Length: 294
Image (cartoon, rainbow, N blue to C red; front, side):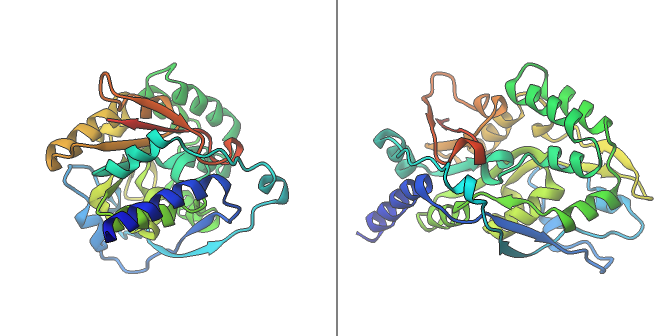
């Protein structure tokens, strides 16, 4: 009975997401002065990846320390969509063993790389490439390399960006994640974005580092930009499907749900699987979420 009650609460929360008029959460970041690598960096990995912090003489790890409320503008509040999810979609949520969320324009309101590029003075050119990457018209790895080459962010720029422009978490996503975990549904983040921006968000949502599949910016000893880790599956087209397969193989989930808004999320669909679009929040705020049984 208790489990059924929790499921009903989750269903109610899903419905509430459609009409919620609340504020996005800001993921805050603070520079660490300690030279030691934090525990979450050491824990990162059931998969091998290159740690750029370890390439620095004086590492300054990224750390989430707080969350705050930032009011939505009145015009945005008036545009929220009240469409309710279908019974079929709610049933998918009820039966899910695990839920994998995209991050940019899904868990968070914005596209992380676009925000970083704008901060570094290359916003428009990078946003055009992002649109092409999301549509699937160019290989993701090509689009990622092209976007980064337009502004080559240094480590100090990334630090400044995280301090001054922390990620905005989509309304009530934190509550949804808590409900899913209360129902013993495991939550993952699978993103073509960067760990440096995603780790603070994951910390706020209580998602452990080993449940994050994302890209990694690489820097040299002087903080100069070197590129990104091509060993990460999410650095290339089809990478999210690879990540989902790894999760499935490791844990044997029978019902796994992927939520996202782009072509790379659609790639994660199991052949022959259902693909349902549900408008969970107003399109101008976080776009269309794709909910798929994979």
